[in-house]
Length: 346
Image (cartoon, helix red, strand yellow):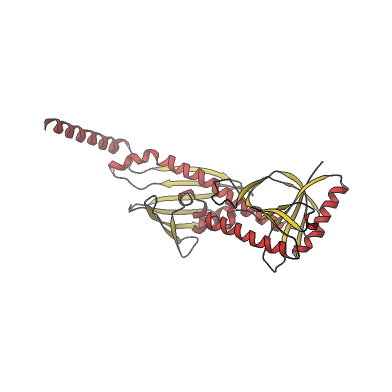
């Protein structure tokens, strides 16, 4: 019995020493500031923060879990908007509110985690560094913690900083795809042959061989595009602004053949494990391309393809595959809006 009494006294002394050290040497809450810059215009950046449906897509706090369930409440953006969330796998839940908004300038978030009645308050300020660059400043005020829980303040800032780092990568990917799409659409000049430098891309898609009779090829493209789109959005949980325009890769002169082989894919930002063997990744290397934008019946693309190959031959350039990028999703019975690219080299 004496042994247990000694152990009990030691435990009490240790807990007392721990509580005293927390009380006298550790603050009950924590305030800190984190600054980041991103290479996108202020208005486009701000719209990703004041709309909570956009915000939860790239913010790592929400986007890192595949099991989190989020409910959105009106208004869906700006002051007064709010969400509630439950993550059964990580055994967490909470609510988040936008309490203050100054357009393209500042926001105040209030986050209640689990059963804590004291919120984390996050003030976010936005400053234009240039037309194409924005500074984002987070000022975080954590809730008061009891004496025994104050040890959490030792890693709160590091944890928050890590979350912001991961969130910024996600945000760049979202804005990158969104801005690329906007820029491509704005820059379209139909039926004019141009030269472009194509950056490398990572595609997720499928390899296909199909008949080239009448409209059989285009019907097959529509079917396979829908398969890829559904797999990307439903199985992988990607949103439309997280991937680029669908791209079809095939031989430049196979429009003459009775059967056509092609690869159809959707650009993504990174490679990951794919559980469905029908899908595979393909990397498109950076290249110099001859380009024509075309709008009309899919069969009418042949004339544009011929223009590209004839230009390459005239310039004594060798060429590879033809890439067909669908600016608008291919749909049966409708015209296509596409970019035809022929990679050329000496």
